[in-house]
Length: 409
Ligand code: PLP
Image (tube, rainbow, N blue to C red):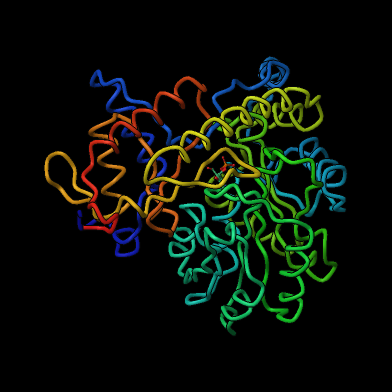
């Protein structure tokens, strides 16, 4: 790497899901009929009234620098959202708007971590958490969960990871990549542990809140414990549920001192979020949500078909997720298999590369989320593509030579 790049960046991994999505674009540009199951964004357009609100804001010349913390109308709408969806009381002074939840999390870590402080991340977890912690001189601490226990966080395992240096626990409910949704009971058990450790803060990434398939009520951790409300940053955004990934609007509410510091940091680094987009987000939060039920019905059909096809494929298995739009697929039975060209598949990275070459299907290896051997499929794509892609994976797997004993070779 060039001498201009510092040591910290030299050891930073690019986002595996963004890289996989780029690989699919590059292959398409070369004329391949590649199907991408890598993308973490809904394939539905932003609803028309939200687009119109942005257009109206442009026409009204809301084109100057926006307030760094977010326009007042949006911060008000965010407070109302937290109250009506989550029964959480926040004052607009406790709310900040940023370029996506991604920037919210980065900035929260940037203004709070001292070098060497630890951040506990349930694993598998979103690709960016650990890299963001490292970029801010912190130490990511994995909190392993298991396929067998449906990726539930064990309160005992959590307690065992807490040290004097622990600064944050990151929760992601529903989870990317597993789709697991934490229940009120599970959140209360986690809260009980954290109440014994007042130096630990919680960053709750609730970006998939409205993409859930059961009728159970949704809970976020600040709701279940008054003690934790005071040390939780509740992050959410419009990217996934409102089909607005490209608008770059995320927001968070939490302790005012933290929000003030995040405003200072953002003001000196990027500034406020694109002004007309904030007006669109006001419409998103205040407007009707009927489209979400339609989108969810489509996601549910894809989820059910995708999980059934995967579980009917030799060597693969997955749970049917309760939330988000991903299948996290176990491929342990394919480790050690031989490809037609004689290469041995030793990792989920080897397998997903083989899928690209043999099936022209792009998935994200589990290693990127801290758990192997798995791979992640996004079902935020047309159901025909999903079906065709999994059948292609099946055909590619059928060409693998797996030892007769079923043991890895
Ligand atoms: N958090 C999780 C768990 C995600 O999966 C993603 C996007 O993939 C984000 C945050 C980023 O959200 P935003 O578009 O608001 O930056």
